[in-house]
Structures are given as C-alpha cells and as structure tokens.
Length: 418
Image (cartoon, rainbow, N blue to C red; front, side, top):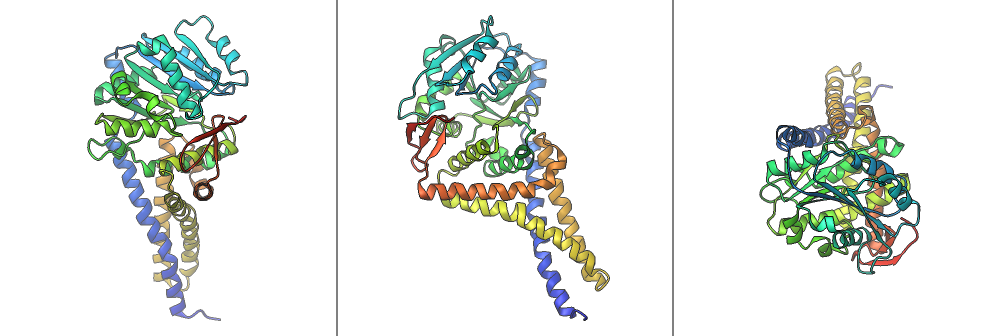
C-alpha cells in the first residue's frame, strides 16, 4: 500500500523539528565553548608565567578531612612533592572515626612543613567543613602568618608546580580570589557516563566568561581549590562569615563580589586533579547538594534545569538519530525530501557529537564517552528532579556527618555517615 505524499511531507517536517532544535542549541553551545576558551586562560598560562618569573610570598594550604582514609595518602604525597619554597600545610582532621589520622601522621612524619589540627566536635550552627577550616585558621600559627591561603579538598591531587602556577596567574590577572576547576578522574562507570554532563550543567549555569567578567560577574568558585590573598579573605570575614553554608565556595565568592574584590575561575588543565566521589550513591548525594545550592534552593529552577537537560541531552538526540534513519529510508521514495531530512539530521549529529567531544576533551574525559552522555543526561535530569522534590518535601540532606534542612541550610543533628 502506497503512503500518501502529504503524509510523507508531514512526517518529514515533524521529524525535522528535533534536528533543527539540536542544530541551534548545540551550535550555540559550541560557539560559547570556543569563546570561553579564547577569553579565559587555563592554569597552563600560569605555569608558563611561573617559569618566566618565580612567584614569591608565604603560602599556607588548609585541607579539611572528615573520614578521608580512601584519599588522604594520595593528597599528602602530592603536597610533599610540591617544590614551592615558602609553603606550609595544615591538615584539619574533623571528627574522624576511621584511620585517616594514623595514615596522615605516618605519611607526613618528618616533614616539618605540615601541621595537624584535630577537631572533636562541631557546633550545631556550623557546617562541618566550614567549621573545620575555621578551627584550622584559628589554631594554626602558620595559617595566621601566611600572605596567601589555599583551601583544598582532601580528595584532590596537586601536580608539581601547581601552586606556583596559581600564584603567577593570580598576579597576572590581579585577582583577590583564584579558584580552579579540577581535572576530574575518569575511572568508574558513573565518572565516564554521567560526570561530564553533571559538570557541564553546572558550567552552563555559571559560565567561565561570566565568572571572570570585570562587570556583571556571576560569582562562582570551586571549593576543591580556592586561593585567597589574606587581606581579601579577612575583608569578607573568612569562613566564619559563611558558617552555615553547604557550599561555602559559592558563599565566599558572593562575598568577594559584594566587597568589590576581583575573582577568577580557571580550568586546571591537568595540573590539579580530583576524584569527587567513591561510589554512585555518594555521587548522587554530592551533586544533588551542589545543584540545590547553585539554584539558591529554588525548586522551580531545579525542575526547569532538569527538563532542559532531559530534552536537549537525551530526548532530542534520540529523536535526531531516528530522523537520520527515517531520512535514509525516505530517499528512495522522495529523493528531495529524504535528502533534506537526512542532511539536517547529519548536521545535527555532527554538531552534537562535536560539541560533546570538545567538552570531553576539555575535561580530559575519553572522547569515546561522548555518545554515552545521552544516558548521563537522563540520569542527571532525574537527579535534578529529585533535588526539586526533596526541597518541596523538606527532606533533610546528609553531608559531612551532619543533616541539614534543605530550605534553610540550618544544620541538624550529627550523623554517623560521611
């Protein structure tokens, strides 16, 4: 039975909607990525600047650690390999119930650059991580005597020369706060399939160009690595000023912006690494917390973000692939219509895969994982939807051994988890 020509035309037009939408969306995404990479340097520029002129000044690295036995040795070894001459390091052991403390002491034995501060409890009105950093800053002699302060997470790894590169880039850009977007590990299935989408969605909300703008800057920072000039840190009140914050990095960045200080956020480009989460449960819980705070705890914003990720990251790519197959099948029946649909779909496929490949390359993720981001987009859309649902139902968030009211960020009782 022959298919009516009008039905073929209607079907072709309907199938072309997805490819056209994908061409516009991913074309604009790719343009924004290239513009961002042209306008905002990476830490590799700081590496070149440091080689030309070695930066100076006393630097203190402060690392809070709550039950971090999985990663603490790797972090400490990377810091021990740092060659910056005026470097001191403070490890804040926060209510650790595992063997983090013993592993840390064994690793830093004999290295006089390190100091350990142990915290036994956390006040009810403080976020755990923020309190640990505040205690380290209050009780450590070397922290109070440093010109530059670096706050880093325990699950990070410093490449040799990272600190000098960051200082050089800070001086070059005349910044009061410099934050790095770490190069994330790509070992587990969720890191390869979901992590790129998760990070890209956050960067879509806080583009590097706006985070580094001189005017109308969108305040942003990554708590995995924040380098402050001491006077700027003290001007905003330090960590005591954000004691209840679940995302102290965003809170501090907003205070820096409010004080009229200059801040910048840059890709680490392989000079600073991080494995954010050990398993899928921690990944979901951690990114849910990040998205809730990034959306200022607004459920509607999370819901809209979820639908955007689902449509442009999962539904339309599948639609587009279907349109490609339909266009190929229609060519023998209606050459002009079939080739038009096939051509649109192929352009959309190339733009989508090309933009995802570029995103993966910037994040040092395997390029072959790009097509798998369809699955990742669906899972992140689900996560954003769950975060919105949790806010509406006032479901407590558990993080760093505490539970928090997601609407008010007020800490609750201490828990046994991490």
